[in-house]
Length: 211
Image (cartoon, rainbow, N blue to C red; front, side, top):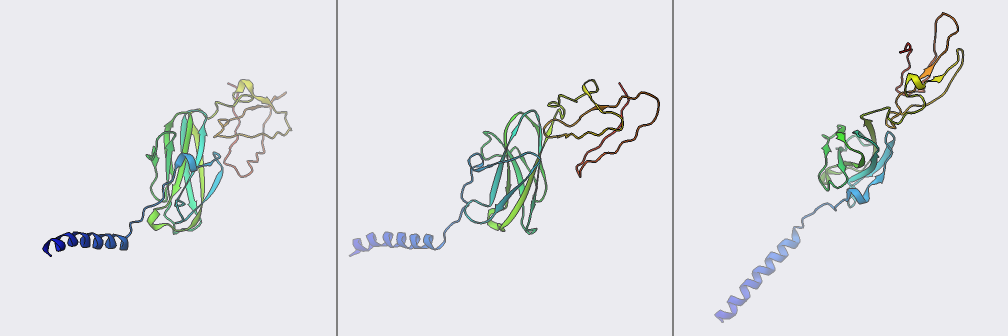
């Protein structure tokens, strides 16, 4: 009888432990693959994502290609102001470690980047996720903002603008076409006045003498 009791007690202890473990499950967030689950992003344009507590949707990511050395600056704005949003930047092959991480509610900037693939992730703490739509904007700050400009990059390649004439063109900082030059030939001494419509963009125009 004593041998029988010794063999039953360990089994009873194990049964109690197993039941106890079943009553207290440990919850972990589902893994999110930055490289595999990211969406194609457009530099300088608004991207949208929805964060929630469903699966691994507490995080979303966008993929960007940098054509030349520079920096990335990302900002995010949740529709629900109660959401605790933070941003991080990852590089191709960096795994789960970001190369730059912002404080909650703040923008993030990754500097001294080389050409290649980068990811901007927007997330909430998975234990305190509030369902919300998020607007993300990522700006590319190239080391040489005029590297891709060709037709009107300098005074020497400036396009001609006749007096009393009008022109329409575009510039793009992230596309490395920040500046465009125009030359106005004058046949006599006088003054120049200019009307400039930036169409709401953060642009400026100025007169510069020949150099």
